[in-house]
Every structure is written in C-alpha cells, then in structure tokens.
Image (cartoon, rainbow, N blue to C red; front, side, top):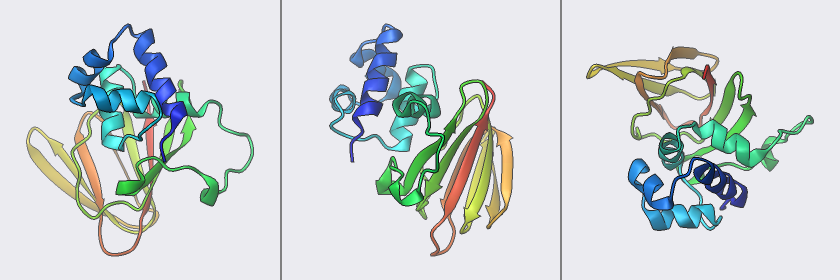
Length: 181
C-alpha cells in the first residue's frame, strides 16, 4: 500500500536540500522514474530503497518515516491497525522517532534469506521479541555471526556492515533501536 505522506516527506526534504530527482537518483542508485512515483505516493519503497534515499539526502530511514508519521499518538496503537512498510520482505513500522534520542523500528516477517548489508553512523541494538534470527556483522572483510532467540539482544556500531535473517520456519518480530546522531 503506497504511502503518500512518505512521498511528500521525501520530496520536501529533497527540496530543502536543494537537490533534483536526478541528483537523488544518482546518489542513491535508484531510478528517477521510481523516485518520482514514490514522491507522488504511487509506490512504496523497500527498507533498502528507503535507506539509499535517506543516505542520498544525508539523513536516516527513521527520520524520513518520522517526518511522514508526524507526531506519534499518545494513545495505544493496536498492532493489527499499524501500517507496515516493505510488506513484501516482511514488514517494518516506526515505533518511536526522537530526533534528539533513539529511534525504534519493529520488523515482522523477517525473510529467511540475507539482504544487502546496511552501514550507518548510529549505534544499533537488535532485540528479538519472537522467533530466531542470525546476524552477520562484517568489518574489514571479516564476517562474524550470532544467532539470537526470544529476548536476546545484540548491540554494535552501525558503521559495521550488518544484516540479519530469520532462522527456522517461525515468524520473527525484531526491534531495532538506533541511538546517537
């Protein structure tokens, strides 16, 4: 389900940065037509695409999601009613965006296969609420792996290339907390 608010937030930040769609396309490695459709609210990015767009704009995925969401409600948000981004490869939703503190993102339906690595300037904590995941951390071309189950957590510098995947058939719920600027 496309999110017009996310597209508007990306367009507003792009314009604030004085960038054209072509410049963001080149910097992100995504096509200009895709970015145009996204800004118009006609398509939805994957978390990987959102990461690339955020990097091109000099910000984070959570900041873009936070701009789109506005102020989070000060009342319960029921899980069944919460919109998910990137539903084709599981799903993700921003639970908390504090520009001066931490961001918390929930991932559900984690894929069994690894995606591309992520790397950024923020500290990251993974917390497994349900299921099992395997985390790969790669630094200087050397990978190390950790398997995490329910209530397990792992913290690391976001500058270390990282990715995770589901282990076994059970669905997963993983919270990712980013701290720092």
